[in-house]
Amino acid sequence: MNIPDSIAKGNLGHSLSLYQGHLDKNSPPWKGNLCSIPSFYSGWLYTSLVAGGKVIKLSNLCGLYKLGKDFQDLREGLTEKDTRSTIIARCIKVKENMESILFDKIIPLVAVKKWAKDIFDYIENNVTGIEGQHSRASIKWHEPLKIDFIWELKNYIERYEAALSEELSQVPAYVVTKKGNLSTESLVEGASNGYCKRTIDLIDEFIRFEIDEAGRCLAFGLFTACGFHILRSVEVAIKGYIVAAKGSLPKNRNWGEYIVQLEDIGASSNLIDNIIILKTKRNPLMHPQDKLEEEEGISLFNICNSAMDELIKDVINKGLDDKFEKALAMLPSA
Image (cartoon, rainbow, N blue to C red; front, side, top):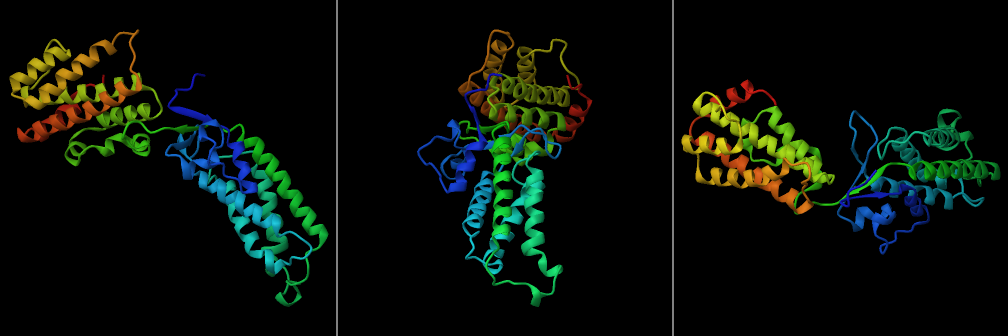
C-alpha cells in the first residue's frame, strides 16, 4: 500500500524505550520514535483499528509515556529493602494503567490484555486488595518484600513488556501532518463545524457529509478525493439556490449554465466570482489523468468554503432561507 507523504507510518514498539526513561529529542518521530511526538511534534497520531464504531481513532501517546514511567518506578522499587507500604502507591498507578489497556483508553490492543489482566490481579491479590482478605493488624506492611513476590511480579512485568512490544510493533499507527494552517483535529472530526453558524444552520446533512468527507480526505492526503467531495458540496448548494429562486433547475445542468442562472437571479458578484474560479478548477479534475497535489487541495478546499459562505449570505439577503431548505430536501442526492 502506498502511504501519502503527508501520513507517516510509525512503529509504536519503539515507544517502549520510554521504559528506560529515554525521549530522543533528536530523532524525528516519523522515523519510528513516536514517544517524542507529544512534546516535539505538531502532528496527530491515528490508528486504523476499528474501535467504538470508528474506523479511525485518535490516540493519546502521552498515555504510553505515563504507562512506561509508572512501570519503571515500580520495577526500581522491587528490592528486598522495600516493603508493601513503600510500593503500594506505585502499584495503584500501575493498576490504573492496566485498566487503560484493558478498556482501550490509550489505543485498542488485543493480545497484551491477558498479561495486563495478570498484573492487575496479582497486584490486587498481593498488595492493594489484601485488606479485604485479611485483618489490617495481620498484614505485614513494613516487613521487607519476599524474594518470591519480587521475582514473580518482575516476571509478570517482563512478559507483559514483551507482549506489548510485539503488539505495538504491528499496530497500524500513522502520524497525520498539518495541512496549511488548517487544524488536523477539525478536519478529521468534521470540517463543516468550522463553517460560520449561518451556513451550518441552512445546509442539509448531505452537504455537511460532503464537507466532512472532504476534510478527512485532505487530512489523510487524499487530495483529489478531497476535491471531488468539496466541489459536490458546493454544487448541491448552487442547485438549491437556483431552485429556491426560480422554482426548478435548468435543462442543461453544468457549471457554465449554473453561472448563467446565478447571474439571472442577481446573485452577488462575490459569489459569481467564486463559482467562476471553481469552474476552472473543477473541469480539469473531471479528467482521469489529472489529480490534485497538496497545495491545490488546500486551495480548493478554502475557496469552496468561501463560496459556500457567499452563497448562504446571498440566500439570506434575498429572504430565500425557507425555500432554500425546502429545495435541498427536494433535490436528488446525485
